[in-house]
Structures are given as structure tokens and as C-alpha cells.
Amino acid sequence: MELKDISFFKPVTDQLYVIFGERNGIFPFCHSYLFDGDVLILFDPQCGRKRLRLSLQQLGKTLADVDYLYNSHYHFDHSASNAYIKKKSGAKILIHEADRIALESFDDYIQRYGMIDKKLEADWRKLLKDLGYREVTVDETFRDGDILSGEFQVIHTPGHAPGHCCFSKSGIVISGDFDLTSPWVGNLTCDVADYLKSIDKLLKHKISALLPGHGLPAFKNIPERLEKFRERLLTKVNDLYNLLPDKPALLEDITKLVFDSFSEKLQKQLRHRQAQFSFHFANISNLNYLKYLESQRKVKRILQDGQEFWQKTD
Image (cartoon, rainbow, N blue to C red; front, side, top):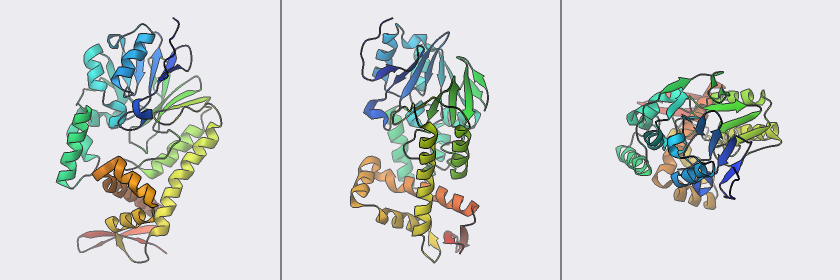
């Protein structure tokens, strides 16, 4: 079938296609991938529903033809259309076992963001529901090394999320949020040490194409770009370490120091993009950096008067 020239729908191979997400794949969207073989598979189907329908039409398909939804991880900007598509198609939803509960329980999903402030939590719940989050039953879970329908092999790559996975076939890796942009750890289930180990794990694979959920697909210099991805994460950790005061400090005060270190332009961008959530996500990110530094014995936590303080060890 001859494909029309649609800017957001492009072939990768004769069976695999990229659907570039709305807003250039920026939250609440991502890039989705469509495999049209013996089965019809959608990977991270949060590109935007109109784009998804138009892309399927290019192949003479509709949502009713979708057999499987493979989720790289549970985050909203990769999974929010699961319930909608399953209702239209009866497609089976698959995700790693560590992320299953977050798709099936809205309460669990919210708890993973660690919002103690009740108003902030209420605002976050409302935003996600308004954007389309719905609880949905997961049909099957997978583990590292599993071979799924379509002959895609699961590569478990935790760090960004406990159940984050990539999907590999013939040197092509659909990589979710291992996207070569800027590593994000603003969630209680993120883990910097696991993130670094997962980058090492991907570097052991011979990858001819890396197809991310955000940013642009990579077809060359992939090991070098993964190394730069790692460097960006470690730079964030080291920048935080260098900002720590000599005396014990509360997490919130450390985050304020980090914000103050940003340029005025970046501070404005953060306030604009994440609104009331910007400080919270930065706070959680910094907590995860501190936990990693603690594992490296560069900082220690001190409990004093019921509060948790952080301090350099040297």
C-alpha cells in the first residue's frame, strides 16, 4: 500500500512505523510506534488520538484492528490512552510486572509522586483525569528477556521507573524514556543508580536504531549518545553536590539553592511548563540525587527534632 506523505507518520522498516506525538512529543504526549506484522502492536500509544487514527488509516487499519498495547512504563505521557484503545479494540495491555499496579490503581499512581501537600495532590489528580487518565486492567506482564508477540525482546531498564523496559528486534530498540534528551527522576519510584546500570545494559547491545518516546530517533553514534545521556544525569548529581552547604540542610532548602542557581530564563521556563508542580518535582529529583550520593558515601542524612537533614560527609 502506498503511503501518503503525512509529516507525523514515517516508516522505520517495512513493518515498523513511528507516529510523532503532538506538541513534538512533549508531555502529555510521546512518540508512539506501530508494528504491522502478523499482529498489530502499538507501543506507548500516547501520540494523540487523532494522529493515531490517521496513521492507522495509512495502513488500511482502524483502532479495532489493534491486537496489543506494549507499555515501556506506567507514566501518564506513555500510557493514558490505554483504556480508550482497549475499549475500541479489545487489545491486550502489557507492561512490566513492577509497573502494573500503577495502571490499575489511580491511588497507587498518585502515591508514586509523593505529594504530601493535599491541595497539590488534588490538583495533580484533577489534571491527570482531565487529560484522560483512567484505571485499566493489565492483561499480561513481562520480564527481562521475554520474547513477546512480534518477536520483540524485553530489555528491563529500571531507573526512570521500576518497570521501565525497552523492546528490541533486529538491532532496533524502542527505548521509551531512554530518549537521549535529559534524564528525569522526579518521582519516588525513580532510582539514579538503577538508571546508570540500565544505560550500561543498553550499551552492551548492538543497536542500529534507537527509537525514543521523546526527542528524535537515533540511527548513528548511539553508544556515544548514550554516554552523553549518562553524563547529563551525573552532571545533575554533581551540580547538586557542589551546591550543598557545609552545615546540615533540609531538602526544601537544598532545592531552593538549586533553583537560585538557575538562570532567570530557566526559572521562568520551569514556572511556565510545570506551574505549581515545578518545585515538587525538583524536590523529588533532588531527593533521588541525594539518595544516590548517600549510596556513594558522599552525603549522609541526619534525623534531628523529627526532621531529615542532609550533609556532606567530608
